[in-house]
Length: 402
Image 1 (tube, one colour):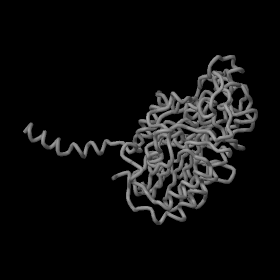
Image 2 (spheres, helix red, strand yellow):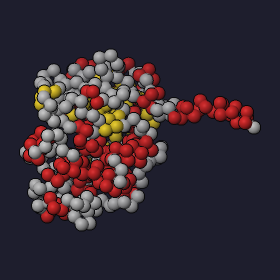
Image 3 (tube, helix red, strand yellow):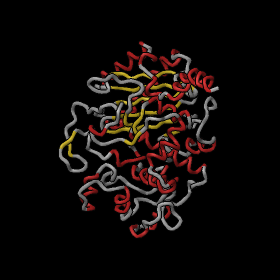
Image 4 (cartoon, one colour):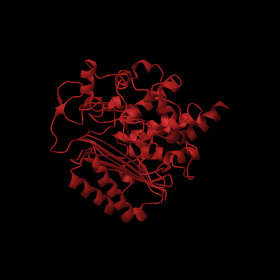
């Protein structure tokens, strides 16, 4: 009997190993090649002096195309499995975590954030504006909490925050929150909107408070790994803090060195100008475009594959209320079902675009342009052009399962 079990184990071992094989390790550029389309991407890169680009295309939850273009650094080519910072695309991931907590009965979207009935209790003595007690989880998700970037985004003016608080190093999340709660809100929660990275930091802290675990680990185990995303991490700030398989980031040629966020001297803007790690769920995730596609496949409501969110949660996240109200996690959702999420850092531009017919295009660069965050319009136009010209030529297959 023992010898029979051993034989069976040896027979099934290759299948077991393939099942455990990570997508980033399995996909190569050789699996996706469409010369005419690749030439358009190469031309786009030349126009904008991009060192590297990662592109994944999914249709009805099947990965049709995944390819890296250019270089991940001086010696490595960009591949489908190369890890890249995705900046504010991280907000989509955080929003999924919040929706999962709602489905598990741990919160509802109109749960207060502060005060005696709020999730983040213990901050009352720092609050000077009673309107803070009106802020709900949904206000944070929709950038309607009343926070303002006038005077500088507190998540990107760390040196100023350190001076104001008399600190010799970057503030912790709790220190920053206590400091910012002393400021009056710019408007009554729910009556207006202004994009807020700090609001999504608070959502990260809410996930930690409810789960009793570090944000990164809980999100990896409960949101990312169930979707098939095994190589997502919270980014480091400096070049020597990069993860195995992560790209190098590059600035455009006009960029000048700048002061490090923590006062350690002059740095390349994409390596130390901002406390990216401190952004947490507001902008710090890194991952590959194929694994990011897997996450989208798990939250798109398409019946072709299993979703980790209910149909109602998907509806809540993608419902369009008006031009003046952000969607939940997504930056824009149209009435006809086109969903967009963008992200931008020094050294990175990221785009996730889901079309009404179930096609999803994901593109991330490892190089800045002089346009900054406005460059997402150009990458969006590129993806629409590629989709119109070459969408019908993409192979009908599923690289997720091959």
